[in-house]
Length: 586
Image (tube, rainbow, N blue to C red; front, side, top):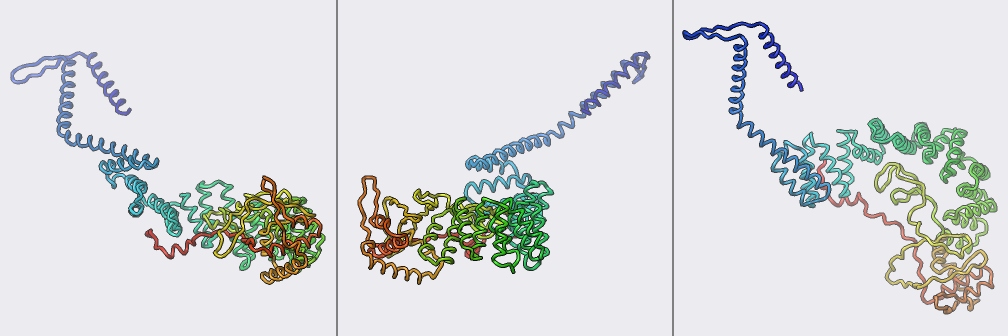
């Protein structure tokens, strides 16, 4: 644009000059070699301009001819560079799409047309092609060379970080993320991994600084930043609760302000306040969180606010919680636990019945078993409630990535994610069936059948057997009864031996009841036993003992299997110790 304006300005000036000469006529006389040349002034001016233009054109032609080899070389070099960039772009797209053949072809073309020093992205295309072809060792070596170059350092660290995560070498992955976070704190993947490393090391202050950096660079939203701060402050409060109650109090209260409905923060704040003898403030805080989200940990801290309180005082505090959140399972369970500790068994039973009406769960039946043992000592009834607990829906627990923990933790032990734990029912109990004949509407978990150990005979049942309800109890399969017996909290093996002796005595007195005879059913496969018919005429306790004796006298007994715990898998620390790292830490 500037050149065009300059050209127009020159033409305008020439036009003005010629117009000025046209208004002032004159002659130009020049004598040369004995000859006199006479021309007008206008002709002389035009001739001068033509001569100057001819000289400029001639100079341009001479210069063009002189620089033509260089211009031709530059043209072909630019054309080669353009083809190289086109191949590089096509290769990166092919690598991202997973087209191995096209990526390999474009990589070779780009490598021939461009040089690695000229275009750093060529190293990335080489590494991506190696990864697609399965040459991971060569790709890692390429990423390590990229780390040595300041221009591609972050790209190389990112590649090594992803490779370390793929191979499960978390220590190496954290190391590369730390290096990237030091160079560029604005990288989200690096800062998140660095936060994970800080939390694993217990460096809560360092993790909080990284969260502040993420919030200042807009990597995370304000709500997410407050959530992460609350989680880290709660973890710091729990770590300082014994050594520095004042510091724990400040951290927990700040976490409660950031997330008012965050139960772990409220629990930590309540404990810290009670340690500082600030009973009224801690009580108000726990009552406020109880109204929003009733939680058993809140109830436990609230009820045991003062260590010197009697059991009756604790029961009063539990009743206070019940008035704050009526018709809730956790309120009824809190009252039932406090009443059981205080010896108010009638009150405890009423609270448990209320909790079961609101939502049957495992802990309610276990608490009923404790109440039964403390009040009556009837082992038959205790085993009955324990069997109900085995089949009941599981209580909510702190769950993160399929891992169930008894207590809250700031990070997931599976993925290392910050604030991953949630209070919910674990997923392994979601597949259940309902026993329609059970008045308590307990759910029976569907558990995969474990492998049979050598030497153990297992009796398989082809079709389900109908269960008839007698009063408040129902005859249950032998496996469920045996499981309930093994689950009792008493004397263990000695208690089982005593039960077997009692069962043999009862069987000797009532042989007709001890040997149930299987009756054939109709075409639908339903089977009922004489034991069920005989139990209708007897009290619940006698029928239960006779049934156990009959099962004990059979030649082939059904062997109960306890629930199989979750497989924790291979310990990553052991793997790291056994196998050397494939990565170079720098």
